[in-house]
Image (cartoon, rainbow, N blue to C red; front, side):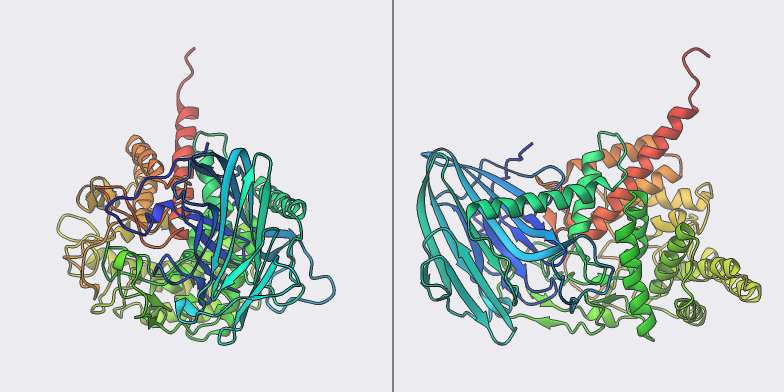
Length: 634
């Protein structure tokens, strides 16, 4: 069903974060506001400088295609089983439907290899085209096109030029970023500096299209509306074929699982297999605050949760490609980082863009992420858990990867006693974070299991002894007087990352300390029932201001509640979390527990991964409970 947008309040020129639509071709993505304006797009890669950046500053570029003088649509939806956005407009004189997609077509690199693809090519490939179609369904509608790129995060405004003898095509480029955009339409274009403009009146049955490409060679732009429709049909076929490979339970929550899977697929970078944490940068975790980070990179921490979710849904190709990305960066980087660029590059310099106002004035606007250089000891555990999960599902461990794994396990063994920045990448003082030491235990435990699978029993025995030492240390120093695991040694503060203890097998769910910790987080680390990462007044994270409830933590709580036998409570929380999805069934990183407003970057891979795992935990537990019940005849 099409969803009506939520009206903006307070006179802000920025749409609510939850109202943005997300498009992807698995190489590039963009955000579309309810007004029909593309307000965020980076080319040729998602971690490249933006060409449309209005989500961070209203003058940083946008691309609107919709009815003139009407900004609020009657409804929006994704075409079922796709990442193709359909917007329906009612104007004073008629009805208009606009269809937006990033085009995917059959593999077309037939004469030479790609310069970017390192994974096994599939049958499909990105066309590098943003395509927008309009059709008047009733009456008449004044249609407007305004394409106003502003290169390099709004720092370089260039000018359009005609590319053909008629009014149908234009070109604009910026030498500094090496990006050239080409625009083609069946309307009549006019140029005013960096603005490409067109307008017409459509009557019932009339159509129009516009296509934008950044493809340098052999641009795959349609010439007619019929060709544009064919491109949409091919893209629809791609998404639906992909989704049909998944294994989704016949359950009322199936739609949420499928939409999360589609969002995750859209956040992959097909050439390398990388999974982006989110499509955006600097959307604020605190309204008007400074907790604004760039998430357009691939965190290795996401790997374990990604593989959990993807294998659970039977999406093995994506899991294999992401695992290959992890293996590539681990093999070629002696000091493994917590995150990498989508091409696997380790350098992610953080920069503040002082010329941008920020979303609703939230500053600073950051690109790059200095957390890439932090000491985060959980990284060894997440990589080893990913390898173990992948190896167990495939019954195969690459010989080229084993020396890398040995290096990572030995690093965990050597450094687990040291403080670090923790899973949440705090920018305050280093601490002995309990979750970090737990993940070091994971590295030794999974390494031990992998060594046993290889028949290397002496190494397995040595790593097992160190794992037991870490386990004993955590159980001795990470627990307070109540028997609750705390954020760091000597602290009484709670931390939602400790919900992972039963999920990672550090302790059995029946252990009283696990139950006590899960229930303490559920009752004391929540706002209106939604889980915080930690309380900012108790934790020195180096940044001022509060933050919203982290959606991933609330989904973790669902899974943990199932583990400790609180199934009814888990289902109730899961139902509430699913009801908090955006009108297009997407999730940002955080949510204001009091207003339900989405906060932070969107769509957030971590949130959608945790949703998949939590929903499957509840469904499987309910199925098991149903099978365990006596039949009515007994």
